[in-house]
Image 1 (cartoon, rainbow, N blue to C red):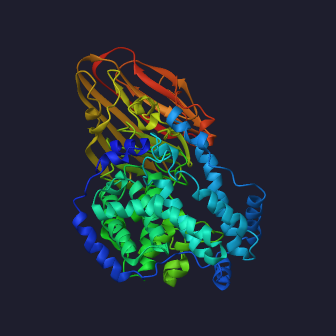
Image 2: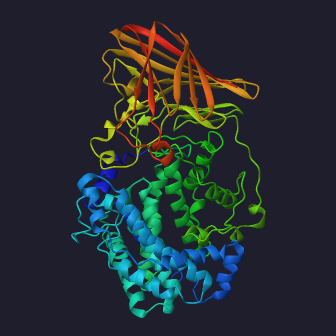
Image 3: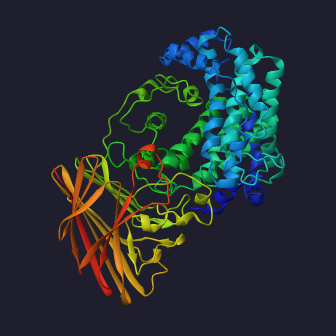
Length: 630
């Protein structure tokens, strides 16, 4: 995979221009634009029905079983509150103290007002929400920028010194264009003109300038990170729906996206996973699916990017990474609550003709753009039925080096990997153990983003460095960052009775003096409907050194016998039997100086329990065998 950590830092700090360059594929853009011009309708193609087409909206509401009273109540609640001004003071938070949350909350409410008013008027169709809708459009179009404050650390967009395109502005442009185009002459002419002109100024014209010159000043256009499909989806959606663009301009935007979005697909492992984790698959690939479906509809099925070979594996691999229940690997910057969007998964399965345990549905949905794109009615009838497909007892992703073992009791996830992936944590050898779907111990997930998260101080966070992960600590050394700090798969052995994965972790610790070998072996042993997990760390130094291996948990740990630990969380327990080559002590450390993602997890204090050998040794081992308690 390409390494884009520096590019992410530049995006977070508003330094996109520093990465301006002409891509090697630039000579493909003009031919792609020419091909798109022959396929796209000259008048454009929006995905939202015209507001005045009441038959279409009645059918839309009926097919999605919409709660019309609730949707109009949302609109009435928006009517009861005035349009707030642009929260300039909150925008400055990020550049002064690294906090993005206040601006995102306040500005999100302003854009939410646009959404609620539009939805209420679409389904009711009586005109009572139109004045407030026009006022909201005017207000948003008067903002100095649509870029998120966290992506404008130098305030260049806020102060009008530059115009960059980011996750927020691209999707805002698509939403604004579709709303203005849908309502058409039901809005005042000046409001329509202002809305469409603002979209051009803040998003479409800057993108067209890049596509014409080959000087892609927005780093994400040349990236394999999820920014690529997210921003391209918004830009292409806005371009296709914008009535003021010429056919040639629309074709150039779509042609450029067609060439450059392949970089995103090229960032996946060959097994279909992404180093960014499940949450970033849901975010990034859902936008790729939106982009692909928007283009497919605009070209009447003649361009289907989801059918590209490089898109098929990412479409279906991540749903197979579910550990059990609603538990997924919380690796990279993903939270403990991370999960794949199973509604998207069901639709993708139906589109691509693969088994899935859910049927695609849009029941109750009016959210933009999914309710307008992922319509089961557009799929073949045979594809709409659920085809049960239980997850297998084992899933192995050889490129991502992730092994998942499943039973009706104890399940686990183990990962080798490297420390140079996007949104990286220094976590080679990490694991998670769940009992009856509850994550009792193991990897703790990501932290709430601050300026530190995307800076040279990133690995000060105990949730991001290896100290806060359930991995060894040889000679008191932590894992290094970068692709060279990597696990190497030494052996795999998968049978009906046991799954074994052996990793060489020594390359992840270049700072450990005299470290000769460090291996970690996972053995998942099935018995009936349950299973045990054995983790064995073996090491050797050139001279005696300290050694410890850590276990992390959101719950509690107690030493109930000289060789036995009991971990408990949310009413579930896991017992660990310990065997070591030398006497050891249990050292507890609360993990502070971080804010975990998710309200539930922020109320808890994650803890690290080190199994520390009492004296330096030249070689030895630690073996833990985990089993569930009734």
